[in-house]
Image (cartoon, rainbow, N blue to C red; front, side, top):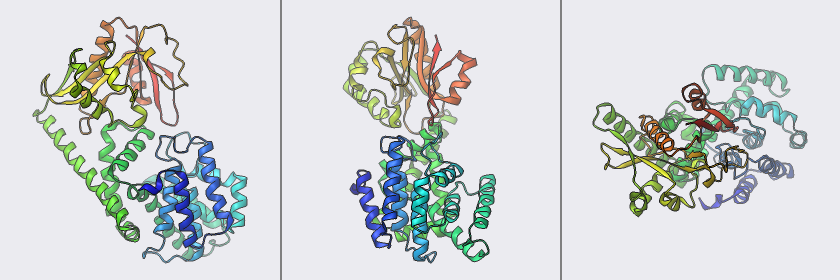
Length: 438
């Protein structure tokens, strides 16, 4: 949707919804601007590659107001202002150490921020009720996590003059929290098409340090829960949204389900040995073939954005005689390409500026870019076979070290097996830079 090209256009859309819902006092506009400023000043603006950035915060606020006249719960004007404030602050954790905000930390932050306190007082908002609404967005709302949140909720209700002895109101506020929780999970997937939804899913997976093999499976489980376990509230929200947004949401759900079906079918073929994954060393002549380069580039584009190294000069790097390329092919050395490993001398890469690699400039280190596989082929060991082949080639070319990025847990497991060592750690992603002696 074009109107969400940037935070400025999102802000305008929210202001328009605020006007329609009677939230026109200066304090509400100030809250909006303060949130945008704070997220951007903490590096969580549009350039932050994580799911819980300023876009997400504003999307949830916009959809909360857009669907607020749904038919499931009757909301008063007072309720609407509480939902607006809770939506705006629900992931308000600018000092995050991991991408997914922890509701307790969010509550601690908004309880201690002096400017926010003043704005809440001028809007005559009870902070304890805001805390309850935010706690109810805890996901998943089950098991131990739910029990801990419910205990906190009880204390908030007890501390608030408005809710202390009013069980009916407490129940109503919990329903409002359920509404906010569903909007939180539906909004991002209703505001854009499937391409954007897939980008969000990859973003979420990268930010939560998930392995790529679980992205599609987790997305399908996530949508099924929304549509089955929480059918009544999700139905009410979707019904209150414009037709185009409903279509976006269901197109996304169906697309993820289709990809999951393909994934299961690939895994079944692999299990029945109808399909073999063959790691293949590519010769230099092949690396100049435009069709070969395009095939690799298409697979490369399936990686989350932070893992796309050297996108601008991808073609040139493939033709470079110092670049090592292995492919993963189906059934034999000439089969369809479903993945590749690629890398070259460390000096040819511009890595994150925080990295201080002592071997840079010594021409003794090869950098292995993140492995690229087509969706559906992760988790079948093809990636690790390509990596092993890459290491053997680097060794034969007399490199002393290999560096790359991997999930922190994966690197830990390689410390004993391969004498891997951490060079630079990155939070909140936990996607770290490490070195292996060849």
